[in-house]
Figure (tube, rainbow, N blue to C red):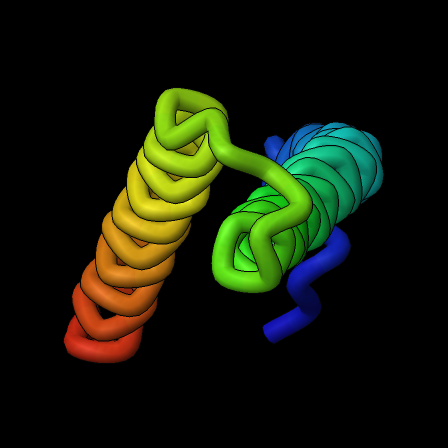
Length: 106
C-alpha cells in the first residue's frame, strides 16, 4: 500500500512541518526568557552578597570603635538578613519546580 495515494497525507505533512516550525520558534523565545531569568537570579545572588559584605564591614567598624551608630549597623544587618531569606526562598521554589518537572511523565 502506497502512503502517497492516501488523501490528506500531504496536508498532514504540511501541518506537521508548520507545527514543527512554530515549536522551534517558541523554543527559541523560551530560551531567551530562561536566560533573562537566570541572569536575574545571578544578579540577585550578587546583590545578596553585597548586602552581606556591607553588614560585615559595618559590624567590624562598630567593633573597632570607628562607628558608634547602632542604627546603621542594625539596618545593614537587617538588609543582609532579608536578602538572604529572599534568595533562599527563591532557591527553594526553583528546586521544587525542578523536582515537579522531573516527576512528569512524558
